[in-house]
Amino acid sequence: MSIVYIVSAPSGSGKSTLVSELFKVATRLDFSISYTTRPPRGSEQNGKEYFFVTKDQFEAMIQADEFLEYANVFGNYYGTAKRFLREAEARGNDLLLDIDVQGAQQIKQRIPEAVSIFILPPDREKLEWRLRNRGLDSEEVIRRRLDTARREIENYCKYEYILAERVLRSEAKPSSEELRLLEMAQACRLDRVRERVQPILESFGAQAAPSAG
Image (cartoon, rainbow, N blue to C red; front, side):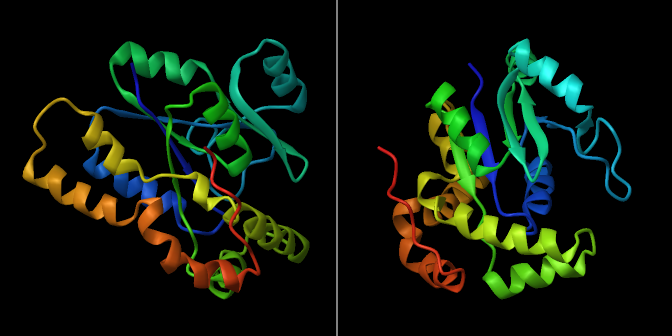
C-alpha cells in the first residue's frame, strides 16, 4: 500500500523548490502532476508542470470520476487524477501530491492515513515581495493570492511533517542519514512548532483553525 504525501503552501512560499530538493534524497517516490484549465505561464510545458486541458475536458473527467480531488481556484480548475495513485501502487512507490488546502481536505477524507506537510512563508511582507518579484501576476491577482494565503495558513495546524512519517512507517532499521532526517522532521511536527509560527500568523492577521481530530 502506497503512502500518500500531501504538500501544501501559499503561492510563492517556495514549495516547488522544496519538492525538487526532496526528490534528490527520497527514493521510490512518484510525483502527481495536476490537471488544470488555466493557460501555461512562461516556459511551462504540458505534462511537466501541469497537464493543460480545456474546461470541457476537465468537466468530462469530473463526470467520469477520474479525480482524487479537484477545485476551482480563481476561475480555473485544478485536479489530481486517480491514475497516479494506481500507477504508484503498481510500482511499489509512494506518491507525493502538490495541492492546495481545499484539495488536501478532500484527499484526507478519501485517504485518512495520508501524510501532510504545510509550508509557511517567512511572513506576509516577504511573500508579497516574492509574488511581485516573479512578475507572473497582475496586481489584482497578487491581492487575491495574499488574501488566499491568509485563509490557507489558518489551516496549517491540520498538517503533519512528511519525512518523519516515512521513516516511522518503515519496518527496516533506519540508516544514519534517515535518523538525521527523522530528528529534523520531529523538530517540525505540529506539536513542536505552534509557538514558532505564531509571528507568521500574526503578520497575516490570521488565526489558526482548530486542529482536526
